[in-house]
Image (cartoon, rainbow, N blue to C red; front, side):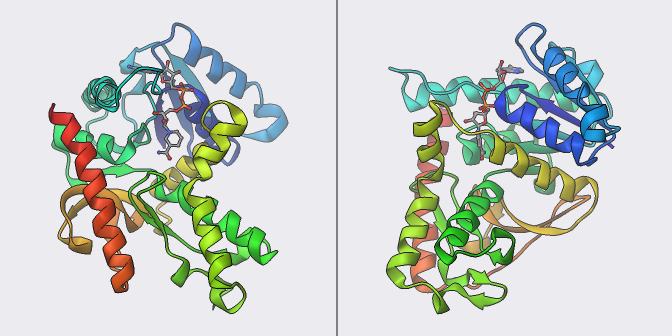
Length: 308
Ligand code: NAI
C-alpha cells in the first residue's frame, strides 16, 4: 500500500513518521517544493527504521510526481500560513492555487487515489479539491474532525480525571475555532454520559477549551501544532488503507445530509477502503441543529472567497 504526502513540513513529516513506525503503509513518498527538503525528511525518518523497528520504505522528491505513481492515498498538507497584512481572501487564493495544482499532479500519476485534504482553510480546500478534480465525493476527504475530536477527548479526560482512551466524543461542523461543534451531549465515559460526572459549567469549559485548542497551541509553540494533526491524518489513512471502517468525523460533500447541500463540512463518516463509505446520520437536538446551520453559513462564506 502506497501513500503520497504532499508537503513535507511539520504535519506532513509527522504523518509520514507515524505511518512508518505503525506499519500502516508499505511505501510513503514525501513531496515538497523546497529543494531537497522532502528527500531530507524521508532520509531522517528512514534512519529510525532499525531503532523504532519498521519496514515501511520512505522516499522524498522535490516535485517529481512520477515518483508518486500508483498511490492508494494522497495526503495534501502543502500550503502557506497567513502572513502579516495578508487578507483571508489572499490566503485562500494562494492555497487554492497550490491545492488545485497538487491535486492535478497527483491524479495524473495516481488516477484511483483517495485524496485526504489537510491544508487550511480545510473545509474550503476540500470543497475546492472536489469541484476542481470532479472526483466522486467518496474519494475526497477533509481531515479536521479527527483532530478536533482527539482534542475534545483530551479535555474531557482531564476534566474527568480518567484515561483519554476510556472517553468517547466527537466534534462535527466546520474546522475552525468558531465553527466546530463539540457534541458534549453525546460524549461518554465508557458508555456512561459524561453529564453523570461533570456539571454543565464544566462541560461548557471543555467545549470552549476544545474550540480554542489549536489557537492555544499556536500561542505556546509560536506556530501551529503538528504531533496531533500528523497522528490524526495517519489514523484516517489507516482506516482507509486497512479497511478499518472506523467512524471518524470528516469534512465531506453534503447533498442534503444534516440539512446542507453543496458544501464540505465535518460529519461522522464510516471510513474504509473506498474512502467515505457512509455518512452517519446522528440525531441532533434543536440547539445542535442551529449550531450546525450557523457553522455552515460561516463555511459557505469562506467558500465564496474562492470565486472572488
Ligand atoms: P509547514 O509550513 O510546516 O509545511 C507546509 C509545506 O508545504 C512546506 O514544507 C512547503 O514547502 C510545502 N509546500 C508549499 N507549497 C507547495 C507545493 N506547491 N508543492 C509541494 N509542497 C509545497 O506547515 P504545516 O504546519 O505542516 O501545515 C500544513 C498545512 O496544514 C497548513 O495549511 C496548516 O494550516 C494545515 N493544518 C491543518 C490541520 C487540520 O486539522 N486540517 C491541522 C494542522 C495544520
